[in-house]
Amino acid sequence: MNRGMSIGGISWCLPERFETNEDLVREFGTWTPEKIYKKTGIVRRHIADADKPVSHYLALAGEKFFAEHPAVSRDSIDMLVVCCEARDYIAPATACVVHHKLGLRKSCGAVDYELGCSGYVYGLSIAKGCIAAGIADRVLLITGDQVTRYVNKQDKAIRTIFGDGYTATLLEVSGRDRVTGFALGTDGSGLRDIIIEAGETALPRSESTAAERVNRFGNAHSQENVLMDGRKVLEFSLREVPGSVQRCLERAGVRKEDLDLIVFHQASRLLLEQVRDEMRFPEDKFVINLEDKGNTVSSTIPIALGECAEQGRLKAGMKVLLSGFGVGLSWGTVLVEWGTDDGAK
Image 1 (tube, rainbow, N blue to C red):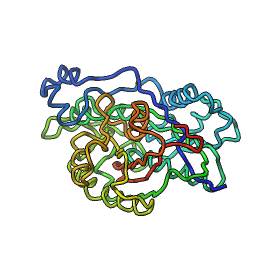
Image 2 (image 1 turned 90 degrees about the vertical axis):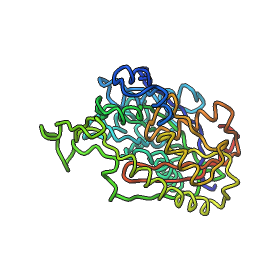
Image 3 (image 1 turned 90 degrees about the horizontal axis):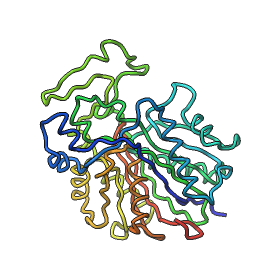
Image 4 (image 1 turned 30 degrees about the vertical axis):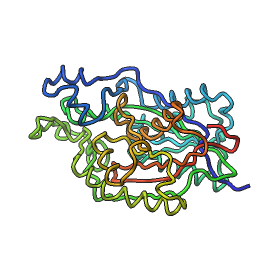
């Protein structure tokens, strides 16, 4: 049997608590809700509870997957792959904690990897390797973060963008290979363009790292908070993503005009529109869906895919281009043919 791979299903969950643009305007009083929406494309963003570990939400996404896909038994999962930059402990791996919370069998492997905006595409590549090598027939890929935990409450620019969200995707062996054309890339010289600088071995937390600084726009942050240079991130996206897309299409043997849907990492509406226009993608095929979620980092692409499937916008046999790009700097693009060997979504 050809050991190809297909997406067997996607589930996602969002924390109950959320902040609206009106909430932020009441707190800061400098912008209007309309101005925030115009710049970001976001109306509200969900916030994980600070007193709950990230494994709680990652496991919730897994539990929701099994509830929504009763034909998939927990014992059929051969590998659990978890994409998360936050973690419960320095050791053990968060994947081990989530594995236990989900009640997966002991002969099921579990592994973490630490990526943000490109994380979903990289997770698909890890699952593809496991399936192609015969290590697993079914891989459960779980994504999510607690990025809002690291956002300074007085940094209104960053606070308007990020939200928390969690997803679970089943990848399974398939006679027809439906996930192809991987084109990955890295540029560590841009590590400071999106960074949480303090807290690990390069810069342990201290009184100095906790000290807040206020920039010329009145936004406060410390070295323990998320810091992002929006201009450099936009320049990086326009510089690297088009080439990654072209390599992916060439490797998959697909023309740009053959694409049915384009789902990029949902960074912000402004960035997405500039990338879309630069690459001349038609608006009706290009997905922008961060309005009621915000930028959920590694979860933006699978949430968008799942919502498109729910809305009937995504049907079996459609060719979908996925591209994630951001912190690292890291990027990745892949082509997905939606559906499975039995026609399921």
